[in-house]
Amino acid sequence: MSHNSQHDLYEQRQSFYLTATPQTRGAVAFLVLIGAVTLGIGMAEGLQSRVWGALLFNTFFFFALALGGSAFSAMQDVLGAKWGRPVMRIHESFCSFVPVACGIFLAVLACVKFNIAGAHNVYSWIASPKSIHHFWGKRTWLSENFWVLRDVFAMAVICGIVFWQIGMKTARDRAFVAGDKVGAEAMGIKVRDTLRYWSAPILVVYAFAFSLLGFDLLMSLAPTWFSTLFGGWLFAVMMQTLMATLMLFMWAFKGTAIGQVIQRQQFHDVGKLMHGFTIFFAYLTYAHILTYWYGNMPEETGYYIARLHYPWKYIVMIAPLVSFVIPLYTMIPKASKWTKMISGPIAIGILTAQWFTYMLVVMPEVVKGEDFGIPYIELGLFFGVFGLFLASVFAFGRRNPMVAVADPLLHAALAEGHH
Image (cartoon, rainbow, N blue to C red; front, side):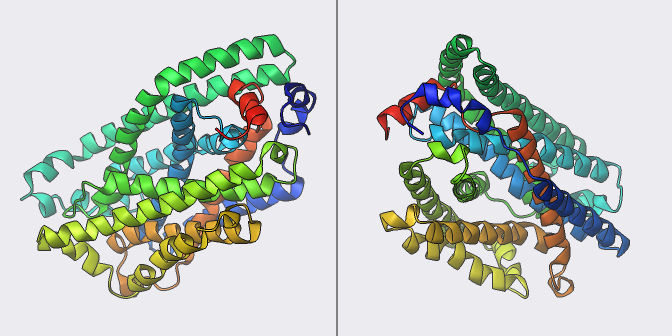
């Protein structure tokens, strides 16, 4: 395919949809089934708090990926960046999981509110309000009704923005595929200009809403611990895992029609961002510990000390090695970023390590270390939520072209190269 020809994009427009084979659909359905069975087994065995905790952190893991897909598009749109246009629709497809994740979160909030299946006990400040009675700010902020209302509002705002932002972009491309080249070109210019104006405010709203959900759904599990860096730290994890996931999807699509527009420079740039956010994540992680040390805040150290005991200490030792040290040095050579046998395993390692990092945030608050054992519930629910994520992406790709064919900046990127 000639990379500088809009005509070629038009001729191949029907090949840019994502069609799942029966085997793929069966595999995705099997993953969802594993999650549903695991949830049922966990509830039947009386491990309700552990099930709720595993559901929370697994859903948040993929929710961050999905929201990151939208945020990363907004970052490029506000700058008018061209380099990422060939792969932009891939990470925009992740956004399709945002409403699914919000649906799961709403179900969890409802179960907590009405104390269904022991969900009331997951958040200790709800089960035992006296635990935060002496903290005026915390007991004011962590009020159950206020907590539910603000989180529902934050999720509604996020879903509304995602539908509006991605809806405009895909409508333009569907018009192009339908044969309305002139109309799609006009829409493309209008969408580009609209998002150039609105993407900065969108990012500000995302920063507040994502931090709020991180504070309320994850950090409040440990109500007497607090970190003003937590929102930024979650953003660093979000972006590192987003780049790792995007890298894997790029390799998966490389031999398809969708992958024809992906050039070496896109692998190079996504690899550089994966490398950069690896360093940023490590910096913010270290900053947490350093701040508590030089600020002499012993009341905050209990959170970390609890995670230095069995079985969490093994995650503390291994996860930083896999999510920071190995990628830091392995991804320095240029060629490593566009070499499948290097960047692929590194991306898988990052995702695995950060999954364990999310586990480390949530599970010590809902299950005693000596009762943890084999993480079969956590893994089973991971497969279930992963299946829902893949199902969302496939459903998106079936309705929308996975290449932004009517994006005027895509044509510029393919014609001009690296910008």
